[in-house]
Length: 76
Image (cartoon, rainbow, N blue to C red; front, top):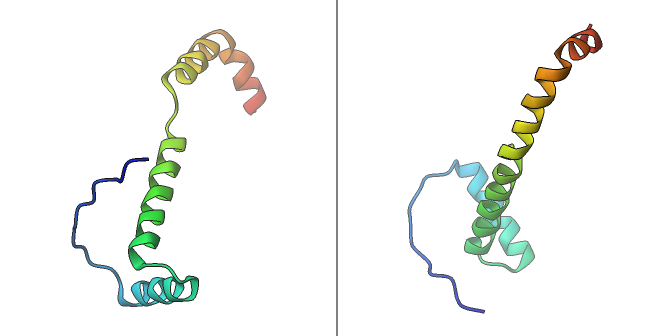
């Protein structure tokens, strides 16, 4: 497995949040960097899952054109 290429960046975080994350890293015996990486990975995965696939949207649109009156009755 190849090592990922890392890039330094700077940002600002609320003091309380950073203190909590630092304490969590200390308790887990991990580097702060590894917790930040985990958090970014989780965020990206969450966003990826929340996007509707084009094929699903097309199927919905096709279904809606056919069954719009039924959907309306069900909604009422």
